[in-house]
Amino acid sequence: MPVPQKIHARLTGLAAAAAATALVVAGPVPTGTASAPAAGADGPTARATSGPPPGHPITELVGQFPLPKLQETEAHLSLSKWGYRFQAGMADNQVTITEVGRRLRFADAAARRWAHLPKTCQRRPAAVGIAASCRIPKNFSNSRMFLEVWPRLGDDTVDGSTLSAKYRMWVLVDEGDDTIHLGAGADFANGAFDDDTVTGGRGNDWIRVGTGSNVVDGGPGRDRLMGGDDRDLIRGGPGVDRLGGHGGYDVLWGEGADDIVVGGPGNDIGYREGNDRFREVESVR
Image 1 (tube, helix red, strand yellow):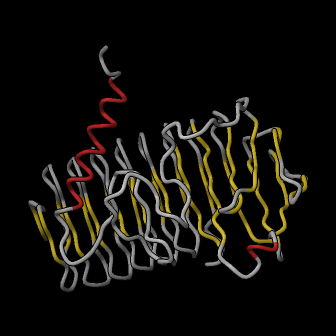
Image 2 (cartoon, rainbow, N blue to C red; image 1 turned 120 degrees about the vertical axis):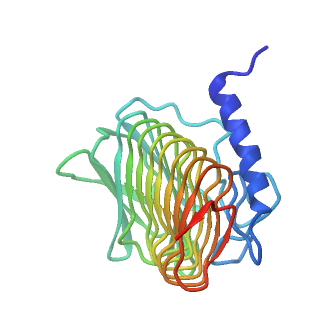
């Protein structure tokens, strides 16, 4: 039975990204496989496993468990052992997560109804869409907390840019031209398909994107940034970063420190600042 084109392309991209990891010297970089940071580490560390280690949520949705069946304008908020998990239907979701006192406020300007809220959360009025205010459970009062966001299909926007380092955003988007703004924690974002824009915060972020022409800015911190199969623009920002262009004709800036930059297949352009190290970058300027 022939493999559907989209699945075939995804499997091919995952295999190529795993191979690209070996090109980076003197330290780890993110890969396109379902790997995750080492347990207990603030920043991402390369692993050769097919899933996250203990201590971190999943990094890909590949049918591990059933998802809630949501209408297009519904949203679902739950509480797991990692922290809060926001899921949405197939609208062009506009998700914002902010700290209000000792609580978290979740808002989605595109949704119209909460399909589920945990007991720790209460509905709140919103000028547009829906909102909820959630207390911080006692088991997270003195520890960091993951905030998983799965908006799924649509041209989605996820903004956690004002969050403090206590919270680690863990964003898994799907098809659509998505925009993600991470916070001050050691965050993770998986861009998946289409033309995505991902901006890191002050933490040691791990960002990877998939097919499409993507724009990635790691921001401050020691970031791990991986491009996808097409033309990507990747900036490391301040801090010692590791950049991987993967496939396509990529433009790569380490910026601000002694970075490691790997182009991968395609005619890539790299911009040198300081003692940046380049591998498989056809043109270094």
